[in-house]
Amino acid sequence: MALVGVDSLTDLDADDVVVAAVEAVGAKPDGGVIPHVSVVLPCYNEEAHVLLEIQRICAALDATEYPYEVLAIDDASTDGTLEVLRKAEIDFPSVKVVAFHRNGGAGTVRRIGSGMARGDIVVWTDADMSYPNERIPELVEMLDFDAGIDQVVGARKAEMGSHRLLRIPAKWVIRKIAEKLTNQKIPDLNSGLRAMRREVALPYLRLLPPGFSCVTTITLAFMSNQKTVVYVPIDYAKRAGKSKFKFVKDAYRYILQVLRMVMYFNPLKVLMPPALWLVGIGAVKAIFDLVVHPFRFAQNTALLLLSGLIIASMALLADLIVRSRPE
Image (tube, rainbow, N blue to C red; front, side):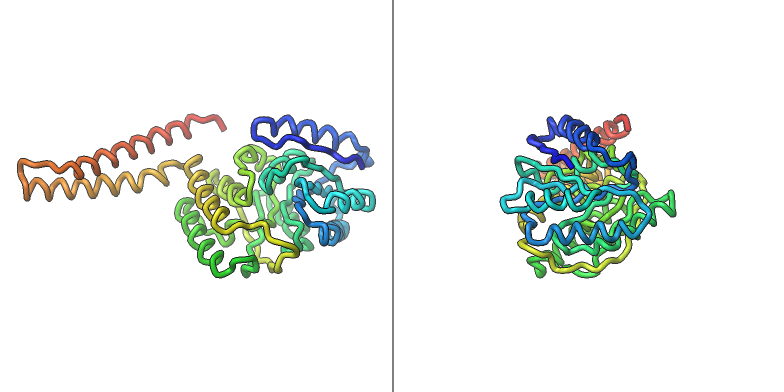
């Protein structure tokens, strides 16, 4: 199979990259079989185990009747990952390799890979041996069996990543914030194993950030638009190789992305509560000030009231923009 090279990863030219890459992949003869399942596999410095992961994915899907493709995307690895993928592309007919010339991050890989996918169902997973990819057919079957389900996510039973003492409470807090803002139960906000309907996911791909918070983004995008997301419990193993997760930077990005996504679809959820609190506190303080000092209106009281009113106005304006935005 021909190797596809992608050189530019910026948001401005990503659509052109996708079009060119799709044309290149589609030009390779594949017997005329259109895949039903497309597995998007980000690969960055996974030389030691990426072949085992590809073998596991292909073995699981070969045992089914689903026509499939595995889009193995090398994100400008600095080790021998690309060479391993080239060999795997020869040995596994369903594997297609895409090579980035500059590192774009897991979100960029998944965004471009999902845009390239030809299957009705797109599967996201990792190449680090941490997720039970042998269960991919199970996720696909759930989507095929129930047309009302739009996304199936593997909810991890335990946290096996690095910085566990910090990650577990941090993820719990972020998840609770997301649940509060979406009014939905979220067993696992940032699981990397999920299957979704491509036609449902396509409008939200442009919202994906470059980094790890892309999985959080796609979850919140579906939930905020009344799409059905179902969770199934999965085991989670300690990853092979070195973790790319940076606790402080990535935790900050997760929180920021949760707020950004809810703001994008439902700004009243984020802005109106603090606005009402400020107005309420300001009103109580104003009454107190007028009782204690009948002819004096404190500056901080005015500041509280004005701040609340300004934020409330911003919330209403943002909501108007969201409601007038074409789907």
